[in-house]
Image 1 (tube, rainbow, N blue to C red):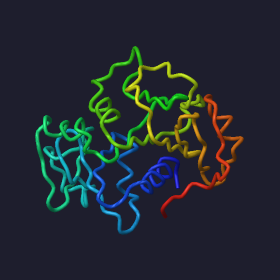
Image 2 (cartoon, rainbow, N blue to C red):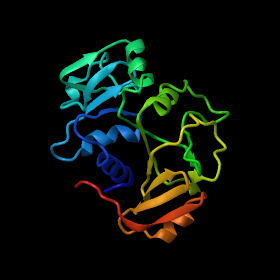
Image 3 (cartoon, rainbow, N blue to C red):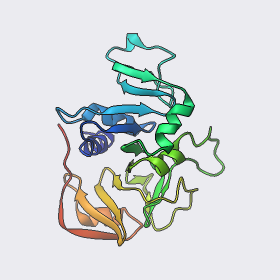
Length: 218
């Protein structure tokens, strides 16, 4: 299993039947492919659909049915489309159970930076700020490093998406929970040691007494 699939598979274990879930652009969209058997959730996209699914056949692509990143999607029976105002009403009104977002950096306070790199062209923050502020649970799904540099840092030097503390960080090396006391290292990816995680992390970590191996689906 490659690193992105590993991350998506572990994140999927956090979802439970009945959840209203928003998946961010990129890696987070893979989470839908790894839902545990029997778990039924409702995926929402901020561009205006509730009940999206992956396409059963690429021939069924419709340019009017896409996720927030413009990628073609399918829809489950009973899915509904709506305008942007209603969509962001769901997000800002606290109706989303979970949002899964990619990350550029997360700091020791659990604050996320994921919407821009200064000096690089960016189309806008999309729904990232609203999602971090409005969802009941915020899960960051990202690789642990980028080109060898840690993405879990003491303090973000990229613009913050929100000041709210995220609820969980899932990387290709570990599962880390931001807490009042700091970043708690809860789980290790298969074959990964605590020392390897520490070496790849700039921020200070608290190692859980009952640290375990990352639970993933087949």
